[in-house]
Image 1: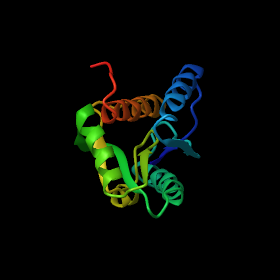
Image 2: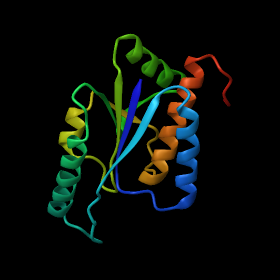
Image 3: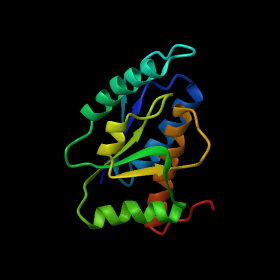
Length: 159
């Protein structure tokens, strides 16, 4: 399985970079995982709805340009479906069984995702009703993908 994590912006803090590197190293045993970063737009304080729409559109166009045609697309969104770790593992396993060779996970920027990105997604996935910083969300998502593969392989994992 090829897994792409397409996200807006760069990871600035070293502790997030270190955590990501660790989980990517662990994941290499199970699948090919690539993090694809697209440029983020500066969001001015007190930005108007019109400015926010323009920012979402620009970031959304960049995201859409990085999605491979044959990808099963899962966008992280607060209004998405919540899954347990076991259900998440089953989802990934099921896609592999059904012949899906590429999954693209999408993480938006500070304003979220454009309607076009959400429309392209095959699934909207929520990790919580609370909002996480998008840099931290990368770590959470990468850890959950790793956990999913441990579950799929019947290997022990922390519950």
